[in-house]
Image 1 (cartoon, one colour):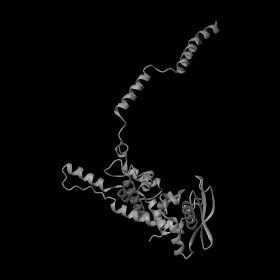
Image 2: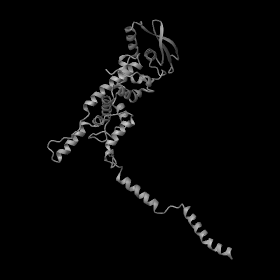
Image 3: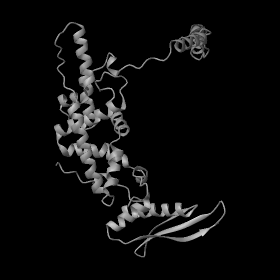
Image 4: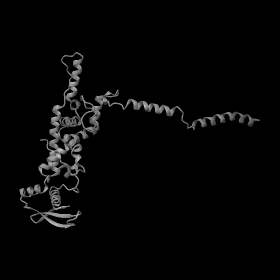
Length: 318
């Protein structure tokens, strides 16, 4: 009798537990879900993509905190006032002055300085630091080659790429949105000037080395510095350095008078082989041999030892 009573008490509990477990494992989808999602997608496509908005338009935006975080990410100690000035462009100040005039202020005073002078100073600093880094790591490259490399590193697209990836895009105060590459490049130059004024030339030169000079990593210098007439340039170089006359000689050939003709030419100077080259005709082979000779003389081969950026000597502060 006791067992019967207990079994009757347990039966409702077992039925309740089984019903709850059956509810948990149900995996059906309501009929209204798919039509609702389709309608939401149709409305989104009808409205179009959401327009780009500046990061400062968000409610949680804190410009002072972002300025501090910018220096912390780069492990640099910036003066907050100088860094704010580096991000402030003239167009933003003009825009703010126009807003004050619209509300009736006759003599608007924004109380901010633009970065025009810092951009010019940063451009000079970057150029000077790069000249010294290139000269110390590539001593055999002539002056025109070093100038071409510096111009490549200081191109607007290159500096804008660096500036965007270190987080300046959202911090720039400018009337234009989205910001142009020229604005990004100018901001990076101003940041370098602000760092030099805050921490000195040593930290600024290291900053330029880490972010600008390292863009040469795995780059073919022959694509950056292209010699238009390599044989003439080689002849002038050898005569200027009293190395002797340059003489191209045919080393070998095969397939003459066929579409698969190949010529092997060597460049000799004072009875020494400077370089060799192949081509489908003699002129192309001579040009390739002259380029190969210049690569060996200036140590710009594709298989040269990579630049050790950590051991680059710091540029002089003058």
